[in-house]
Image 1 (cartoon, rainbow, N blue to C red):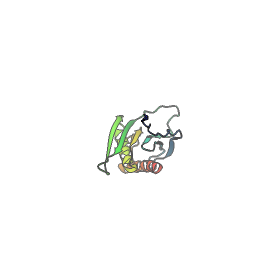
Image 2 (image 1 turned 30 degrees about the vertical axis):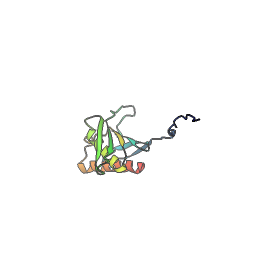
Image 3 (image 1 turned 180 degrees about the vertical axis):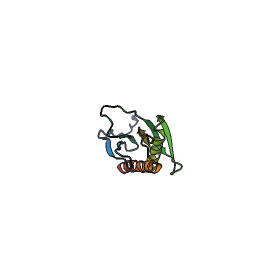
Image 4 (image 1 turned 90 degrees about the vertical axis):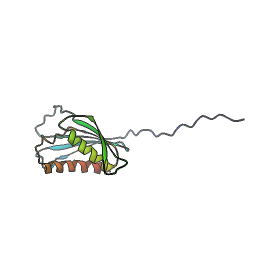
Amino acid sequence: MATATSPALPQTEPASSTLKPEEISFPLPKALHTTAHIHLTSFGQCAMVFLATSTPGDSAGSVKPMGSFVYAMPDRTSPNSTISTTLYTTPSSIEYTTRIAKIVARRIRAPVYVGCSINPNALEQTVEEEMEGLTKIVNTIVERLG
């Protein structure tokens, strides 16, 4: 006589409760008295990054706008390109946020969410100085996720 067996349940792993975001701060190159702040969380298959800057004149109790929020992922068909979607737009930071999201997604080869309130125009830097700051931010993120 045949016995009925119930279908096997898929094996799952419990979610890690040890996800600790890293908070990194460093002086932004060529931007006098400006500190870059990175809040970085790695989820294994993707990452979440929040970027901001501060200056000595900022008051501790002031609230800054969140900035733009972008999702980017590497393109499976073309390793040198990325796909991005804007989830929230702030005109002053959308271009910078999208650029960082695409570069990080391509370099870590994984999806990334990037929130950024950095307004590069407000820092009044030359293109070369802005690129030096962007490079330092991206390299710091990739080092920590790599």
